[in-house]
Image 1: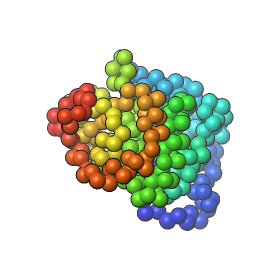
Image 2: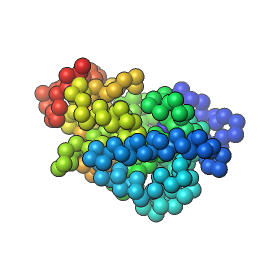
Image 3: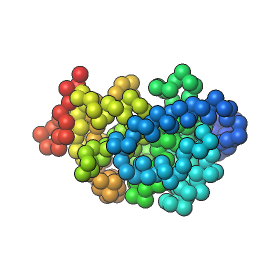
Image 4: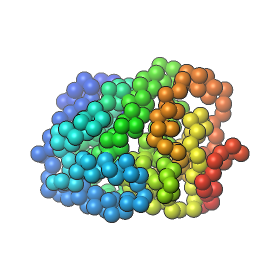
Length: 280
């Protein structure tokens, strides 16, 4: 995951592209147990909540075997399916580095795992969030193309000074996106599928707004990182999300430059409303 304000110079022991060795054999039995606990808890909860591409990706990569996954093992199947690989990173990486990895179909994942007393909340993304949350969706060809296009767009946004708008798109899709299906709303965002509390809140709680996805509208909506989401955006399909990302963002940024941000809890007259939340 990317973060503003990080020096482009990697710390000692980290490669120039901000990757490190996963060093899978160094994980302790206790660390593997944390993965297994989190995995079993989420996989018991997600059927009927997570979208089919996520659940299929989870099966395809066999992420439960022997605790924390060995990147070398899962990369064989992931690369076969969509040409993506997972690379180990020391934590958050500079934006430019993050976008370059995505643009080249590499997903940088944290190498560490949370402690047993941090099962329900962790400030910095760990290997469970990054691998369990993000990587199964990368087995889907359409979503895999979306993530590459996002990385390419990120490099352009850096040069145009529009990163804040693009970050909102990532937040409301890759991290906290919902998908409309004939069976109802389903989760595909990594920040939801990797969290027990958010998996319940995102679909069941009456508090948040659940609104139809619109690219420009989403990029005008700020977000908060210290609480559950006040608004979720619902895409009609993964293909629709990819198609929107292939738009001319130069023209979109020019439009956004003249538009004020929208309140996080706003519902506009033109919004497609799935749920008008109480905001309680």
